[in-house]
Length: 494
Image (cartoon, rainbow, N blue to C red):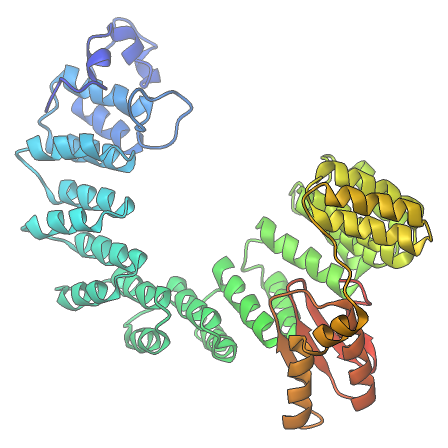
């Protein structure tokens, strides 16, 4: 093992006392006892974890370098287990040069050393080098095969993944899951389901991969049906299960199924509810559904019942909820009691509420504060200008629009005829017209678009739902709109 490494040499030539720092139990006695090979083996596997200490000329931790130096000073550099652990240390620490140097100079390589090198190259995405090491291996184990299969799956080389999977002498559950993950990443639904059906045994990772495949490839009904099978065989869902299922419900616009799913998760407690983004989703759902009491209770129970400190995103959802409901003073009071500064999203939600509910004084104050936070965001100027215009403060509206021009954004007025022509061909209007022509009168019209619904289209869709007496569901960039009998679930606030 080389002792001339620029990283190790300064430590190797240093006095013995600093080198005892990784071994606190050695510091209790003096003179310091000589560490054994067992001591080095115990410390090495943990040495690649992050540390706050600086790492000279390497991303490997200071702790790991000290242990390596102890190995050299103590004469254990030829212990095969220690060498394998050092290769793993440097490979995981992204110092593949040092790992390769150790690997090439090691005369007694075991399968762990080979696997450590392959894993290091795979994690760097260097599949060519990983394959060269893999091909040189004489005795491969299942970990060698799984690492290569997973690496090819990650980079999207599905043919190489399939070839190695077919050549495997024996497979375990990780092998099947890695191959399944490769099909999912490539969006190959049929082959993914074929492999899933052939699996001799499945765990929650297998089910989640197949659910994600259906959800991502536009097959929400199949995803929900597969979840029913998953429950029937007694597999407990995980956080990833919920993400795929909620995505499937979103594609279908199936609010009722989404609510049932959330209720089931809370009842079974099979998902760790401490996941912050799940709380954000539930609070956002309360906001869009106008469930003021439920949203406030959720925010309160985060800390009181689950010991979770709400983040600014959670407060923002409740501020949005209160603003939508017209409780603007309560929203402002919540902003004042937050343990952190509100973000622009929370203030933007409050500003939108001020415009909808006609609170011009509060809107002016919030708008100015928001413009100070985001002086280059043109939408803030437009919203504040509209608030001034609604209050008949034309001079102030003109000043705000002039400020907006200084940000590089130009507001243009269209002639009425041009505006009428542009609005007539908005995508949701065309989709509604097609649905009215081809769908049964009792069947809901479902529309998905990637932009926010404009106010004119929103108003027209309300009128159509009242005139034709049907249900129209529109999913835009912000939320779902359920139109029925001339009313929308967003209460004209989106």
